[in-house]
Amino acid sequence: MALGGIHVSVVGNALTATGTDRDLTIAADTEVVGINDGAVVAPARLLVDVVRSLEPGAVTIESDDDLVEVTASRSHFNLRTFPLDEFPPLDEPSRPSTSLPAHALLDAIRQVVRAASTDDARPLLTGVLITSEGEGIRLVATDSYRLAFCDLPTSNPVLGAAHLLVPARALAELQRVPGISQLVERDEPVTPEGDVDGSPAREGTSGIGVSFGDHDLTFTAGPVRITTRLLDGTYPEYNQLIPPTYPNRLHVGKDSLLDALRRVRLLVRDNTTPVRLSMRQGGVDLTVVSQEIGDASETVDADFDGSDLTVAFNPAYLIDGVEAVPGDEVVVLTTDASKPATVRAAEEARFQYLLMPVRVS
Image (cartoon, rainbow, N blue to C red; front, top):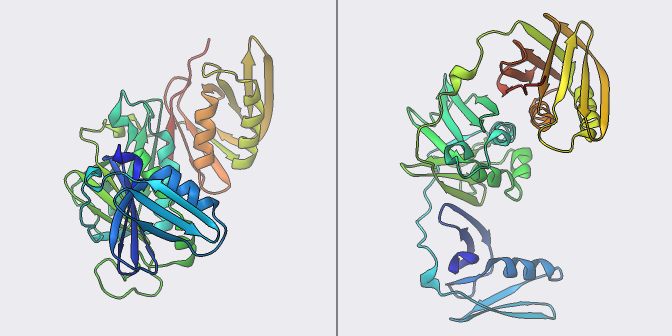
């Protein structure tokens, strides 16, 4: 029952709010005017709704064994609390052992996490693999229909020989940390106190702190810490799925292709209706045929090298991949109508998105 609550503690002038479901724990620190030290477990959703509804201004929170009292201006709430001893024990937060560049890491997560599975029957595929690659790290996700990976150069030794399988939902929560976009834009240090080694913050440093053990991983983004249990198991050998070469190369404007895909997709009413890409010299023809609704087609100007080819894809998956590509130009690499295709940027291959074609008659 206490898992539905938020643990709020005050020590001096520091308030820490913590929520957990045992697999994922999020804690946030903020400065307050502390009167007495103490802790309470309040109903999380109700407390948030109450505080959000209050008029701007100071909020006072007091608690005893059974109630938490929230007062602001002329508003007054008494909320029933959960027993403190029923809330899972909280570990002492560990300082980050290293950091990753915030902007690059968040971009990599945004690009890769979309390919992770949401099917709990295949728990390993609901995770994102973080592994060493060259002098940096690589993030990998797949749901068996598509595969995305992104290489993240870093001068910091993050993993060594470790391979971390991080639940995708934990990475998605990291993207939603309040103020994280400002952390990136302002180029702030990874922790309020200073750099990851405890020394004073250096001008121009910016990052998300990382620490990990045998069973968990913690990200520190400003005053917020996200700790997640790691998934246990061996990730599929994804490298063998990546074709070494492609004989066909379509070079097309990202926005033009996306706009056309979204228009023809209007006739798609289920996951079994594919979009066909007919690639030829000078362009690509997009076609959707629905027996119940009708058909749609559109031509997009593009540069194509290779043999004329028609390949069919799940339109939602293809749009996901094209959206994730950085820059204004997209390259679609293909072998034939039955082998995986790769979507990536025209100028660099740090991010790649592999997609299995749909077989059509």
